[in-house]
Length: 244
Ligand code: UDP
Image 1 (cartoon, rainbow, N blue to C red):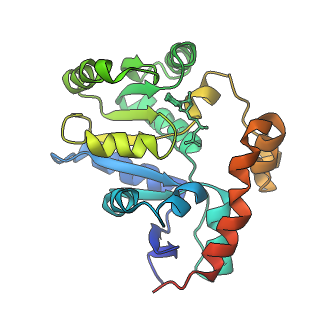
Image 2: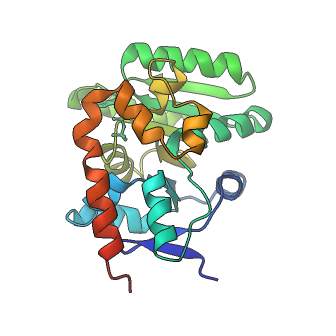
């Protein structure tokens, strides 16, 4: 059996959520010098990789890719090489926090609006008292503030750096600064801090089971409709794509 399923030329490992958490956990305990970059690959990023060679390189060099979204899973199934399940940024973050609660891993949160960042940090501290939250910074910093943020993250040495700056900015930011972050793991998690802070509602489990989370998001955040138009285009192009 193949270990990966290729989505528009990008090999996505066939890993469940549990296997993903175990792999990240191993990286934290057996950490080597290099930062381990986890990328949750969604249809938008897969499409962007087709015309953005730098993003393609970053995705190719990632320590681990996960299948973020039902679109990726559906395409893998229809192409006869199915990925086992969705591993979205938000679900992965929650699973890592659960694990970190027992293992006392440390986190740094970068991104989202100041009030969201503050509320997400508070929610994490209340729900996962075993997690060491070393620091946080909102994601609307000026270029002149970046150096200070990098120095802070470097000096705090978090096990896990969460970057919620939106995709693919988070992935590019992590890649650009990977030698200076002094973190073991870095993950771009999209709007997950908004969900943890309670600012954006996650689709109820029933909707998720029916693979209709995209519809829930469309109803609750109608401003995203333009972005969602990309999903049918992704499906057509990914199904037509001749994988090598
Ligand atoms: N964001 C940020 N700085 C910016 C732009 C966005 O911190 O300059 C945050 C934003 O507040 C939100 C997250 O990045 O918390 C992006 O969420 P979205 O759901 O749009 O993520 P995507 O699906 O684009 O990865």
